[in-house]
Image 1 (spheres, rainbow, N blue to C red):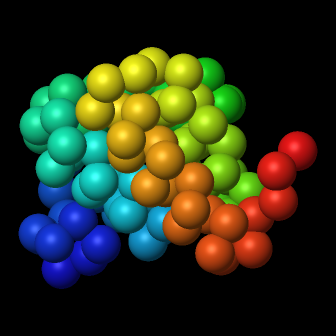
Image 2: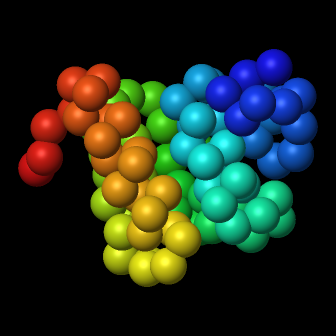
Length: 90
C-alpha cells in the first residue's frame, strides 16, 4: 500500500511516494478516473512525469488552485504539504 491508501495500480503504478500522495488526494476528492485525468493534465502542463521534490509538489498544487472546485481544495492541502516538506514560493 502506498500514499493512496490502496494498492498501487492504474496509470500511476510505479510512481514515487510524492506523486502517489498528490494523485491519491485527487482520486479521493473527485473520483478515480477524474483524479487520474486531472493529475495527468497537470503533470503534462508542468512537463513532468512525476513529482520529484517539494518544489514540484508546490507547482502541482499551484496548478490545481487555478482550476477551482474540489481541485482547489486539494491544491490548498498539497501546497501546505509542499511547504512543510521544504518548498519555497517562487
